[in-house]
Image (cartoon, rainbow, N blue to C red):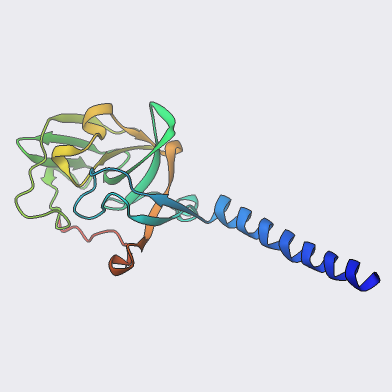
Length: 184
């Protein structure tokens, strides 16, 4: 009987350590995310299974071009995935199919070159936002079918969950993501 209780206690301890470990990892380090919809096509597709890094943005601010997962500002139960285009302190203007970014280094602005989009992609609509501290302008890669900052405004940093870091599914499209290198 003693051996049985000792074995049972050992199984319980292992299970408890496993549950606590999964809870801590899921809460503070990474979170799974399933892409739903076509707003990030062709770079992310409906049904892609991603791992979202929740730790990086605790130590640094999001960078232009990174793909972030966040809570939709008008319904915090809903999660979105979009690309960060405008940073705090910048002015972002969508006009004539282009994205113009104005900041301290580029007072006259620059046209954002987006090599991650298919050639000939046009950013439809119009928008003009001056981003305050902690605000971001985000767009989906599928510009003609994305509900993003052009529609609902700026994204507050408090709504950002994390950085899309890995695509795990489908297996033939496994990918580690990094921010694109922009040339202004």
